[in-house]
Amino acid sequence: MITGMGSKAQTAYHRIRDARPEDLSALARLHVETFLETHGSSPGAPTYTLRENQWRQILGSCNEEDFCVVIELANGDLAGFARGVHYKHAEHLTFKGELNKIYILKKFHRLGMGTGLIAAVASRFLSQGIESMLLFGSADNPSNAFYEALGAEKIFANNGEFHGGYGWIDLKKLMTLIRTRLI
Image 1 (spheres, rainbow, N blue to C red):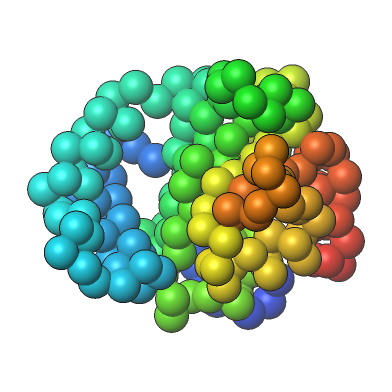
Image 2: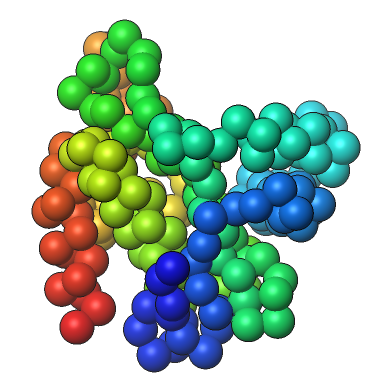
């Protein structure tokens, strides 16, 4: 369990913990809301029913390799989540872990919650012997500056284009950076 990271964040949330099956409805709602806040509304935007089905499958298959952590507010509501999975694809074999999802409600941005979620995922990977992690986002996501501030390096396609991928080759170095920023 990780409690508030930094003085502002301590008042904003209670703890970061593993997602549980009873979080299904709250995670589905949170995922829809944070997705819409991040990417906007469109005809193809995910529905609650879609996210509920996806989270039912995810929560049913969580294990040491594939896990989800949530930010639980003091009142029990969820404000954000991150999902870590072992990276098993042929490209980018340098990376062994994947930060598969990370979303936080906008009203809780810039309070240290994203740093807390990334630290929780990186810590879990390190406990499994995984020392590197990547994520795939969009090239124009405002969160990219946040990833770069935490030492993530851009991953370029074979043609040299950047499509939103970032990686941390050394999670121990990431954790040291996070600890340094919190002191």
